[in-house]
Image: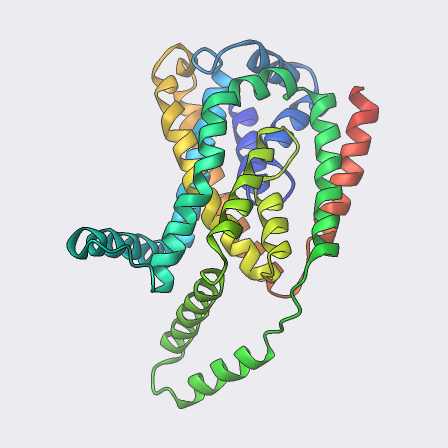
Length: 324
């Protein structure tokens, strides 16, 4: 794999992992569209095991970079979530009573519960899904289906809340504050994040399990993890911004765990001769993922999934015609 291939694939991975357009689908379709030596990357990855395929080993490293970018962007949220989890465990041990009365504690356990189904399914069936369905024609079909799912999510959205009242409250807090402008902005962002996490934590555990289980669909190349998670959140009453936040929080441990479990393959034959490409790719993917999540959190503050749905429908249809 050349450095040019490594950089292009890293950019694609860093963006499409978080945009609701499927990173796995694009990791199959982009090389196939370019053709030549690029197409052989997909061919050999579907025929070899995770331990021997250098392309899969490279994608694993990029997954870790994406997960680290998510952890960094939501670092304040994860600090509260992990702290809440530890508090609830200590309370359970000390007082022999399971207490999740706080929003941080409740959100922590929601993420744990929601992660179990996709984690077990991924361990059991990841190889099967990859070898049977990670092919250009199949990825094109599922990318088209992903577009339909996103459109359905918009139709099923039951959220009608607006940000007007919250914005007025935050504006008043800024005016009354004696902090510097930078400190005021940071204070508002922190308050907004805590308010969002508090709203998400009001979901039922069954709702969290449902949204988390939808991530199983992302094992199909072409189905977006963030996309189906957002659709699930919208259906359970979250607005677009909160659904995106919840989807990114749910995706972080799944992406990180999948990467860490298979990272040792880079030390074997699969990682031979591509260590330099891996280092460059991890940096590129991490930066791309960080700016992608920043963009998307601002996008979903006022906008919807519809443009991404249209993209998936168009690209999926064109790719199916090309590779069928």
